[in-house]
Length: 314
Image 1 (tube, rainbow, N blue to C red):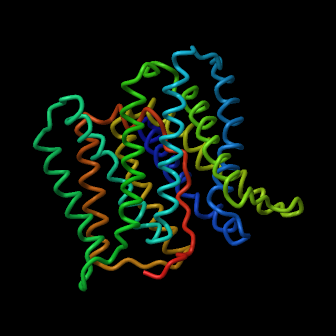
Image 2: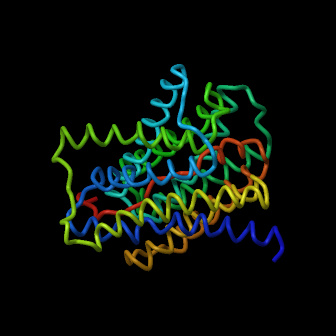
């Protein structure tokens, strides 16, 4: 089979694997587990998997003392990004939330321009405008705002946290550190946030020992959308390069929309479909420009996009 074909298949498999989060997480929520508990086990089980991958590739675990502060900061950033995304699902459908989250490459481009004086191209300006129109189509209904302002603010907070992480991991002193090692410590320090929240909250919700199906779902969260997605992304980059692989990231919100409709019974209006397509195209143009690609591919997102039933009437 042609090398490029293999690369595109691997890239698509990476995004589809990442999109299986709701399939494995929904039974956990139905069993009474909360987001903090699910994320705790997700991180806990993913850490040794990434550790094994690190050893198989002949990498060590040693880090310099000066590298610890930025690693802690990065771990907390992605943990906060995950938490705010989870909270947004209390206010909007998973497909729309995931589509809004996908504007993070646009935020990266803006940070690069405002903070690091990188040139803002016409292509980027047009793409930002297109993304904003797409967001408006998703958000504004016939009677005004169709989405909760709180939910929208939360999902943009998640996108902002992740965008800051992407820029920081490339600009900080650990920019040359192997990605697997960054991932290992990022998950480790991110786990601490959920430990604290569980200690001051309702405590850890653990599936019964005989509930093998629930434990299988927890393990699957760490294996499929984490390890398999990460490995396939890395392999795809080697076959087709970073930019095409990043553009394939558009399959992430598309997969979330698919599972939202099939699993959760959610529906999208024609106006929302137009907004969805416009955001996907606009962000893909930004990525294809090449300016933000190295930021987007430094680290694969490792957090589930799970939907809980809204607990508030909107």
